[in-house]
Amino acid sequence: MNDSFYFKVLYRLYLLICDYRFPIFDRFRSRIVKRLTRTDLKYTVNIFSGVFIEGIHGLKLGNHVSINQDSFISAYGGLSIGNDVSIGHRTSILTTEHLFTDMNVPIKEQSVKNLPVKIGNNVWIGANVTILAGVEIANGVIIGAGSIVTKSILVDNDIYAGNPARFIKKRF
Image 1 (cartoon, rainbow, N blue to C red):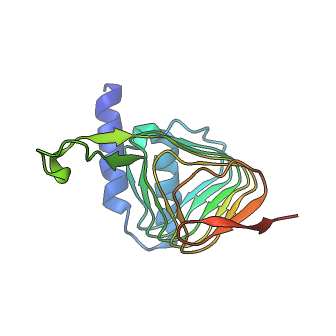
Image 2 (cartoon, one colour; image 1 turned 180 degrees about the vertical axis):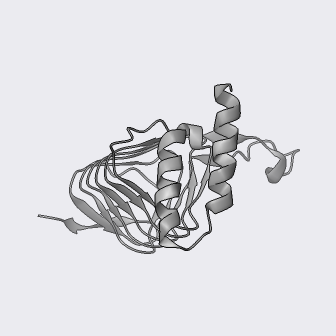
């Protein structure tokens, strides 16, 4: 069996059990995602129900990562999540954006630009957060619930919140 076929079957299995709300499926989802992303099987990764991952081939996961219920993860443009990261429920992380430069073509028919997202170590992303394409988040950062992160956060141990996310204070 070739690698591509194995990958497709495993990803379809993930999609099949993606919405199962029974706790036993959390472990299955996590194991499948670790295999698909070639994450070290010794790492602790928790993928809860309803987490939809697009472009899983572009996802890199660290150790002790949890992605909570009903989150949307787009990894087509490349998404790197560091160690000890907690992502709250209903969070969206986008690595693509529509171009809108050609006035003769409707926006929805124009191409898409891939921009990688990098999330550092020891980051806490609250519930209902949206992280837009091309953003980098430094180590130790907290993003408050409901925030929209439009620009990179490059200073360690800062707390950001709001729409758009703004600096609130230092953690220490």
